[in-house]
Length: 61
Image (tube, rainbow, N blue to C red):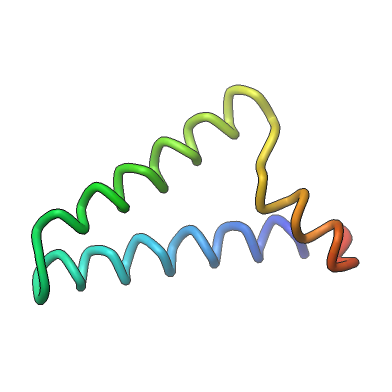
């Protein structure tokens, strides 16, 4: 369950930032890069801040 939430949030953030980059300002692509960097970091370190936050809200695997 938690993995699906993390992927859904990351995908949503990427799509929203791409839309904002097209419609508002190209600098929103920095947010897309930030999300991608966090995904890469979590794949290497096996630590994700969103998972910690979801644990505090009681969402388990």
